[in-house]
Length: 37
Image 1 (cartoon, one colour):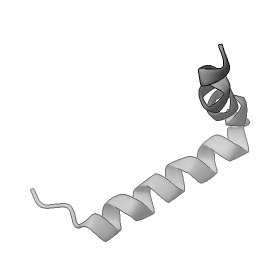
Image 2 (tube, rainbow, N blue to C red):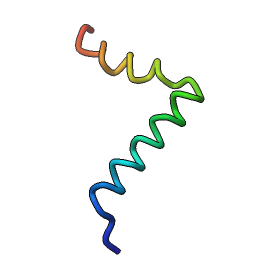
Image 3 (cartoon, rainbow, N blue to C red):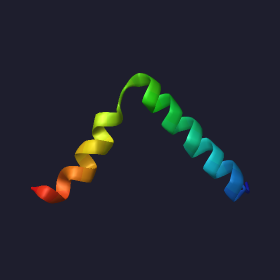
Image 4 (tube, rainbow, N blue to C red):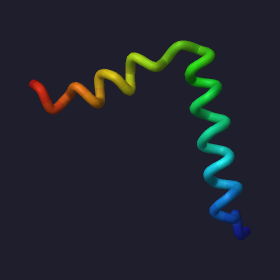
C-alpha cells in the first residue's frame, strides 16, 4: 500500500499535536539536552 509523503507529514503533525495536548513535551526537551551529559 502506497502512502504519499504529504499524508505522512500530516500524520506526524497530528501525532505531535496530540502529544502536546497530553503534555509529553518534556521528552523532547530531554532528548535535545541529552548531548550535555
